[in-house]
Image 1 (spheres, rainbow, N blue to C red):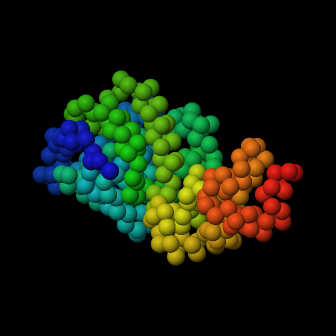
Image 2 (cartoon, rainbow, N blue to C red; image 1 turned 135 degrees about the horizontal axis):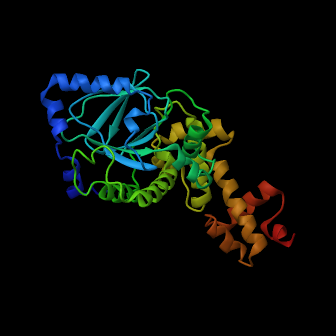
Image 3 (cartoon, one colour; image 1 turned 60 degrees about the horizontal axis):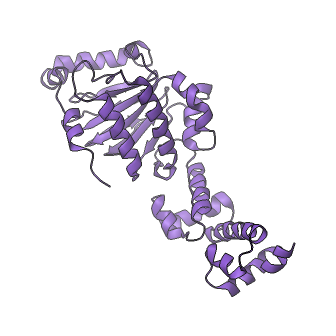
Length: 329
């Protein structure tokens, strides 16, 4: 995947006077950390946020002590890396990764160097209320966002998107940051430019939708239902790619070995990947048999079987009748 826009990255790397003081003065660093602890879980650090969606760039040259956010923050690692600690677990964020804690997650962050750039998309609850109907309730990500509203919270729950390889996500993030940071100054480092508030809100909704397409990139280092994530990824993959699907391709998508994924599928579904694939193909074949006049050989090919005889035999084994008998009703 292509690199982050170099011009925008240079803007985001601009050293602010406050950062320079943090880099040079240990007393400034201690005072900064004290303010972080005092503001943990409180609304005071967010009093300047007048919009439903704001974007800030996180400070470098200082660690963030244990704290929690008052509102939801979607953190994106633009460049370099980050090490975040939750429950004595170290989470390693690389370029392009997302870290999304809920409002009860207590975490710390190790010191950033010059090249370690992280931005935070800060979201007020009213925004989540506005998009709740379009987010839906059928994925791990949508449930995570909606739990924020229902207060049905798992303490120290977070989502980590790792190794995300979707160019549309990068394009969307860049577009939002171009709007928020046409330049960098002390005035806008915390909240970005605010004149495009409605546009940023709409773009944030699109970003959430794009992340929902990449659930297979959610790391298993979080304390959520990883089996649920794999189940959703398998179902979506077989629905969309039933005619060419393979365990090898799916295992690559979810960053697991074929052996490990095969065992997990058997545990979740109670059947093998091969059985699931056959079921999806035959469900599609039944639709084509009942709703089209395509020859059976063409239908077999359309759902992934070049050998028509094999298709006939397996169809009869599965349903007790031949494809032609099924078509005749």
